[in-house]
Image 1: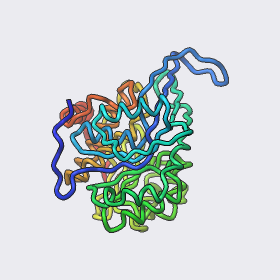
Image 2: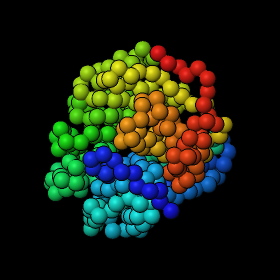
Image 3: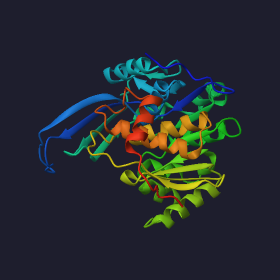
Image 4: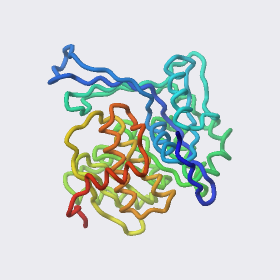
Length: 326
């Protein structure tokens, strides 16, 4: 049963524009031997960065609409069915003949950490500026818009222009390859969420220590971005915004990771959730870190049991004394 939809001041929905994948995850049963066949276990679920973010928001009671493209194949039908089941609005999805739906495969070691992954998101080439223009009123009247840089570069550039002055735009950098598309347009985003490697690419800086992290964030904020949240794995995250908030924050490291795939997406979804609900930066980051833990301790890409109550329990269980604050 879906949670009651939260009524936000102004417009009451979030639009997500970007990837919606069929995820295949293979986890080795023991130590991996590269360039060899390894006994393992496979799991299948619907994923894609933007779709994952919307699923988490939907399960937390936020009304969502997904804008993406699917082929007319089994993968697309499965993901579409799962979107509806999660409460994601699918009225604006584009169906494309003679195209394969997006898919993603990740190979995990015995501890659940990703060793390599590969995606085919070529169907997103059909998400064009004209497609965005067709639904411009939906986009401009949203409470927030989230996208990922798997979109074509000209579409990403157009989205930045389309949302400017109308609605806050959030993005997850996704990977070092996709992060390069954000160079030169960072000022068009309200919030950007990179990891350390992606931060280095976007900022053009080598990062060796905490000071470098903050300096790289300063450069991005100076371009016009309002918030930046850098994920640091077991070390939590670093957050800085143009209101003067700046801190490192983390929860206690988990004992066993099941699947690392959806952790960053879950984190990003709670950044948006915190913005919509006007939480403090500290409250938002604690919820985001808890959502990451909820995701990576679940076999599926997204934890189907996510709720505010569950996240509060995770915060209580994994809280630690002496957060690294500056």
